[in-house]
Image (cartoon, rainbow, N blue to C red; front, side):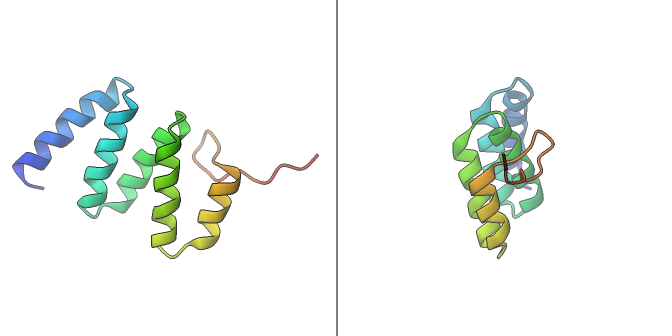
Length: 92
C-alpha cells in the first residue's frame, strides 16, 4: 500500500475506532480497492451490524461478485446475526 493509502487508512481507522460509520465505509472501500476482500467484507459487516443499510447492500454486492448468489440472497432476505453470520429464516 502506498503512502497516501496508508495515511487514508490511518485516518479512517481513527474514525472507525471512535464508532464513525462513515469511516467504516471509507476504510472498507480502501480495502476493497486494494483487493483485500476479506477485510473489506469484515468492515462492511461491522457497519451493517451497526445499522448501516448501505454497507449491507455492499456486502450483498460483494457476495454476488464472488459468485455466491445463494449467500447474497440469504443475506438480503434475513440479514445477519450479532456474530456476523447470516440469520436463519424465522418460523412461528
